[in-house]
Image (cartoon, rainbow, N blue to C red; front, side):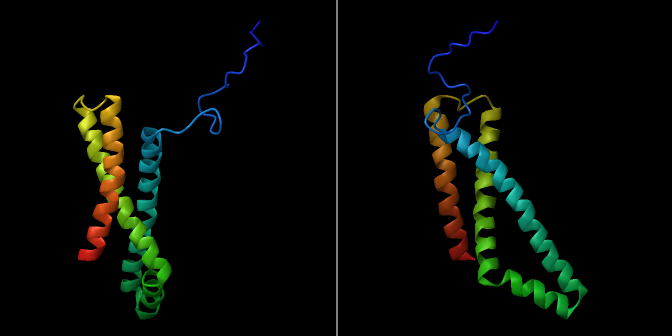
Length: 129
């Protein structure tokens, strides 16, 4: 029979709250997946814009109105950040594929580098373009 007296230990390391605090590496891993999916949505919006341009002036006016509105500006700016974040996270994985960068200190430096680098590159790209 299983030991039912487990004490005060948590049942799972995935219990968020007082038992488990998400670490930078897990958060950056989750954000890599989220930004990848967000980039698919942004790609669909841009594809809609191109198809609307080919469909005619009325369809293009609607698509262009959505993408150039304040909502579209926010979506495109966040998509720009997602693109930089996803690119830097991919470069980190390429670095890890060489068998380097797995010490705890280096993992944290790379994680903060991805977060900070993506923000800086997003702002620079938005200012230049």
